[in-house]
Amino acid sequence: MVLEPLDNSDIPQNIVWLHHFSWHVGSVAVIAMTIMFAMAARKREHLILAVFATAISAGFAALAIGLALFGNSVIWTTPAPYPWTLVAIFGFAGLAAARKTA
Image 1 (cartoon, helix red, strand yellow):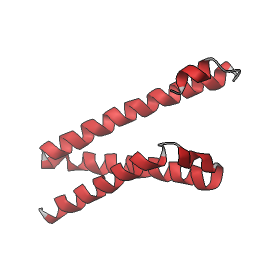
Image 2 (cartoon, one colour):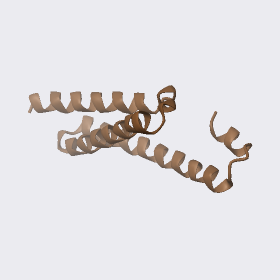
Image 3 (cartoon, rainbow, N blue to C red):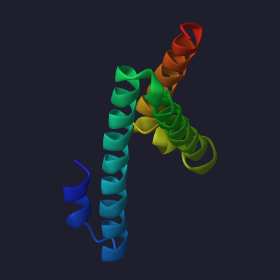
């Protein structure tokens, strides 16, 4: 949906390939966070991983919202601000629930 139109555009190749790189960095981050949340859900001693994954999600949410508010409001029309905010909220809720059961 995004990469093919970029490849077929007149945008300079360094910008297109920086987008490719950023896309894959985001994919690796999502996979790493999924693993961290899964490990924390299985063993309480891995709870610190959920703290890190939640912090990363909150940071990504803040970045997306900040870009939408102070950069370009077109970001609101993309998925960028929404899933990260939800993951951060669920992460904080999970950490709060884990704290109560400690």
